[in-house]
Image (cartoon, rainbow, N blue to C red; front, side):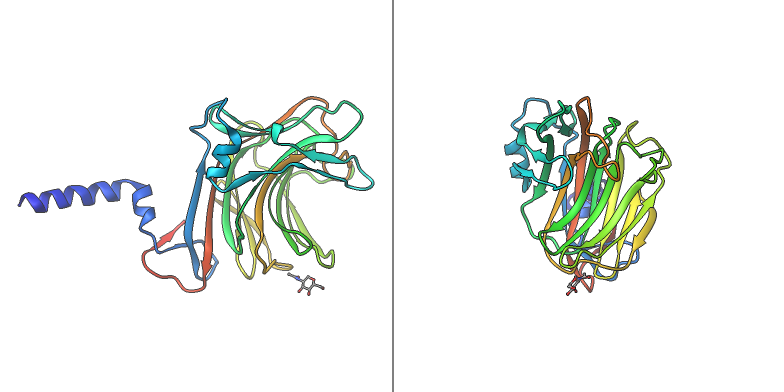
Length: 274
Ligand SMILES: *[C@@H]1O[C@H](CO)[C@@H](O)[C@H](O)[C@H]1NC(C)=O
């Protein structure tokens, strides 16, 4: 009797805790993707505090900080620098420094250390609101392929002469330069609060969601290769893209990153829709 009631108690505890029940998932499934993902990785910056060692905390999560210049012929070059990636209270901050008018635009970027092929990647992010910055959440394999979800802070809510308002989704074949893009209007000001931006990448489509609502998909030029996922904030002054560079410091905040990965075509074990 005692044994039975303790068992019932622990069973109740396990079901009451969503994290516990998720850990027992054999396959995480997402809509319109056959099969699913066997691994969930959750990186939570909501409990971060300013002054923590950013590089160490990120490395413990399999995330690294870019530290190199991007020449960008025809535009202002930018430099990804570790100094512009910092834990603050409750978030990870990606900074683009106010541009002095000469030299490179000092920018920021982090990336996964692991090879990912097909995934559902969910980033809870607050856009900077300072014009002249591109905020990217993307897959990239040098010389091969790229999947982008990008916010351009100059044109979030209002179009410029060259750039339509909204956020951009793109598949890009880096071998031959083929590219397919679509722009989706925001239903809110992305700099006023945190929102979840999600890319579901399967062998046949890249599908995009905001705050769990399906926004649209691209079904061509789907990368079929492994690479890193990256998050960055930068500017090159291109009035056909990022605009800027910013004249005051720009801060993009990431509260969490959730990655479902290790794609399987057939589900196994307990199936958890996510
Ligand atoms: C990218 O382009 C190369 C060269 O044309 C081609 O072999 C490859 O299949 C393309 N990949 C995708 C995903 O379109």
